[in-house]
Length: 276
Ligand SMILES: [Zn+2]
Ligand SMILES: [Zn+2]
Image 1 (cartoon, protein in one colour):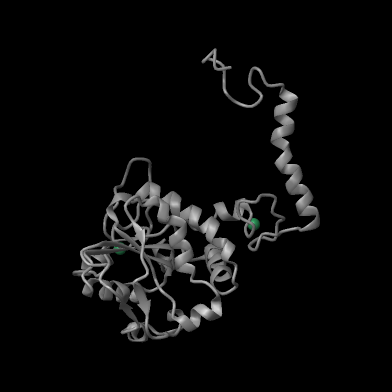
Image 2 (cartoon, rainbow, N blue to C red):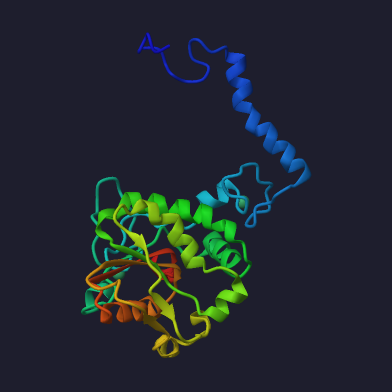
């Protein structure tokens, strides 16, 4: 085949019997069908039987219809601009009204591929509270796609997951933010995974608190050990940014320890319904 560059190098192309190509292509389907017969897996959103191994929790339709954040989005908080539909070449990304009002934000930019709603919300809850750590894989894939498309990957020195308190870590068995950080690390050529940000005080779930109580809840909850963050550009990784208090407090502590800049990468952002 290499002798003739005009021949297509695809299975079933010249030189490969078509029956062989078809059988080879069908084999994974048969293996999956057999597996499904004995170990059926159903989509957690619509109940359809799942016939792919990419994501064993949601069918491709539901995952595709998840509330992914499409351009244009805010260049600071990462949330989609309200009521705007991206049309081919325009409009460009720009800061939203909320972000234009915020002076000296501790977090420079927030990046996320999805809005925290629908199937994304179900996925995060299963991941975090249902102990389904395998969800890190499809979530990581969505994150990596977005990272490649939207981020300046050479910018970061350190990738730091939002830490869990040791008691919470023991209960859950894993830190969801660390699993996501591990999924994306390879996308950042200069960055190392760093664990010098620690949680020194347990906190209550931010989602159950009133806006006023949230900042109070996380104040003094984090600390930085050692001096590895000094003068470094940091990518802080969290599963969901619900209200920004947690990541802002982390960024405050990191900046106080000498970090030059803190950006946030999350799988999902809570966005009020009126905004998208
Ligand atoms: Zn489904
Ligand atoms: Zn914004």
